[in-house]
Image (cartoon, rainbow, N blue to C red; front, side, top):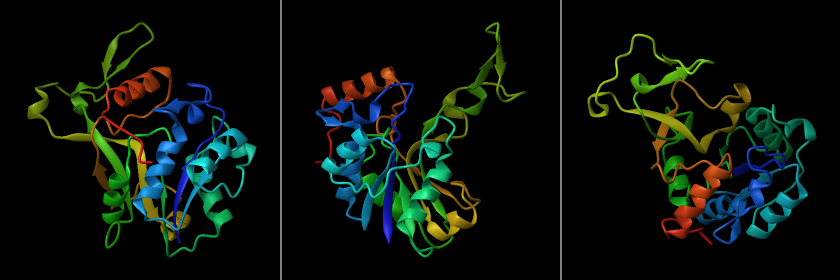
Length: 228
């Protein structure tokens, strides 16, 4: 079995109800469901949620909702790995197969991205994680309580970005790995994990109202459309 798992709890505090808010005329969660289905890679595209409203929006978009997530796995402190493990056990996915974790807060990750990331899995690669370009580490600071800036990387000296090594960060859009590896060690990063690079627009991750407004502007400009 090859399964896409879309985790979508109902208790978002940064933007209440964000997974069912309309983006380009469709609930946010529908964008991810559409792309997973359009990839034509999965035996099943399922949504793990504790919320009936999200479940109904997911079903209308074409996903399966074979269970409602337990409340203890839908809190602010719930660990994503535990949510994935619960879904894999509920679906009885064999160790020999693989799964893709697709977060609904990344609406501009599309079927091409999913297929390309999946294509990197295999051989000596246990998992693939989508990433996007970030500022060099020497540009990172922490801010103290009195607003003093402290270098996050002590001793680093900031230079021109073009002169520094390329730095990427996970963008939260795609996590792909073997089920057996995950059951043995339920993490998403392994020593042989590879990164699949995505653009900054495709990497927009919606946590709050400002993020959603940015996504709306992208759609309004016609830069991204849902894969209906």
